[in-house]
Length: 158
Image (cartoon, rainbow, N blue to C red):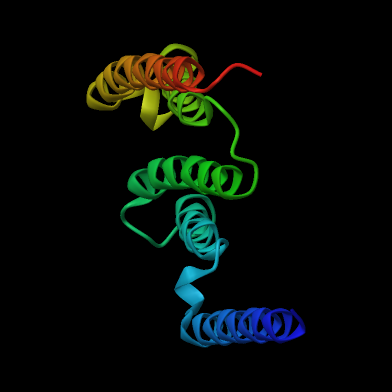
């Protein structure tokens, strides 16, 4: 019996050594692109760049583009960060709803004299993009609700 136990122990030790070796090889092969903070940091950096060019750099021609880009990228950076670290339900719906409220506020409460209020193209974009993002928020919420129902229906009761 001791020979059998010794052989089982040696097999278990070999299996553990193989597993540790595989983990070490995986750690050596991973790149910085695999890090969970990579995408939020890159998108956040682009948001800061757009924000700087949109509000603090008066020498640039595309100020409006940068201001819109800042808003969209800031929302995306917040979304990717929360998605990676918190895994909150209905997070995508909240992102779309945030975009809808942001653009809707531009369309409805924009100060007269501001570019996003006085130009007809900007007002139309803000109005219809706001409605589009609202529709996306509803669809994403329904998708999450159906996913949760499907998971609860297939999982065994406790």
